[in-house]
Length: 144
Image: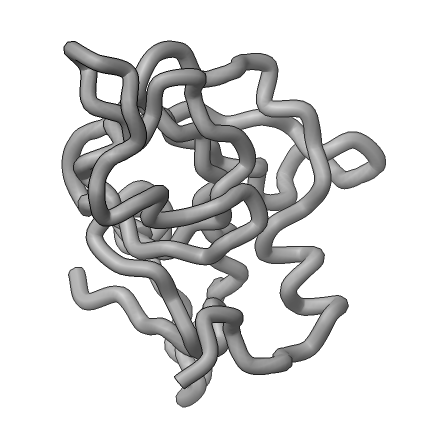
């Protein structure tokens, strides 16, 4: 099984994870990740989702792209030696993050309407990474 996600639509992937300055860098043993944006305004059956449902899906999203890794992430804090199992993820990897926790914020995507979904970022501790995705990061569904 490959460590990299399978190919998916580049335009969709670029929309879900737009290139935008998060306005922060991770310190210590933390990671900065960009959470996947959600586009759903209606269900496949044409049912319009209420704003509360869209907000819940947005903030409970568990799929993210690693943007930056803090200087002591994946290192033993006493010795600064790398963990025996190595670095779990690298910049550019897609991962699963905890539904709750971390520090989360939104950033406007330049060139887009202010009503469009914002880019979502999160800082979390290195040991909180749940899994590294090996499939399409757009196909992973969240259960609310």
